[in-house]
Image (tube, rainbow, N blue to C red; front, side, top):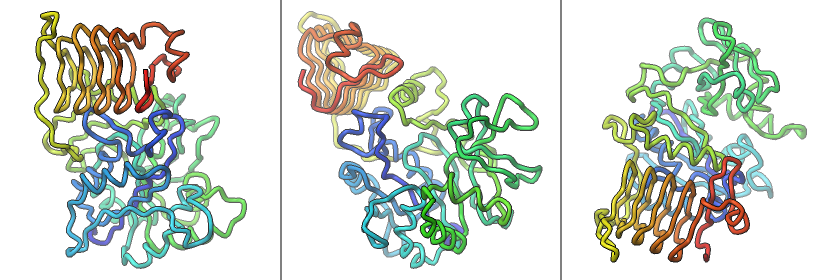
Length: 405
């Protein structure tokens, strides 16, 4: 079953709501959790699920993503038919870039046809979660499904952000509406709705047929949720696979986050610092793989003032030096330097950020390579911050990559 599955990861999103973090990189390549990239979670799910034939469809500012895949994910053996291959737009089917999720795959139909796969697993490269896709593929086979959609329960007031499903007692999908204004509640819980996670298993033959038909439709927006799936409900066997069940090998934590906005991205990182995090990076049965640069161990040293460097309830990556400063409830990526008498609270500092002496950083995200001069205050004076930086709706201050302060 796994050998007959081709996995396609959609990783070309612009991520405009994550600006300026996506100014120079694709959304799946944005750093996360102290050492990872967002796409590492999807790829780790593939690795642990036993999937070894993976196409990553890239597009927007993909150099950083391609470099990360080369350095951290060149682990499969092509001689055994295993691969993780990046596929940028090649304009085989016309002169346009990828114009929607369905169009991205349509433009690579020849790869599907050549693969010999019986089914295609379609994933997004920009969500944070653990999932055993092998369990979903088994469910797809057991139900003799044409399409299987991974789904989860959310509060009814949040459901309009998703594709909303209705199912019968056998989990066969009876209705599908993409981002409806008035979502349908679950019959047994009027406060909740069943929604699509954007994870699909298609029989290859059906997928090829529907992508060709969708491309020929001038009114289509070439999106799975809007255009492909609703038309299949009445004529094909579509089933819903519940996320977070006990049938997979991964410990079911039921944690899934779309980190598509600055506030959602910040909160998902802060979730990792809870005493009992919803997504536990330290569980041994499903580790998240990534590229790890060679770095000395993180350390604290006394500053010139005599203060000891310290960190409390924080994630601190290798190569980091805290020289007399204080780091509290924050995440420091590799090779960060914190100066004497500096206080960092509730913040994310990406790779190679240097913070001088006597600084104060509060509720901020500082992108890679920023040098913060002595005595700088960020996240303390909102009006001054607004003149220099991006500020999220919830007040998170974002310092762009290589910004000169």
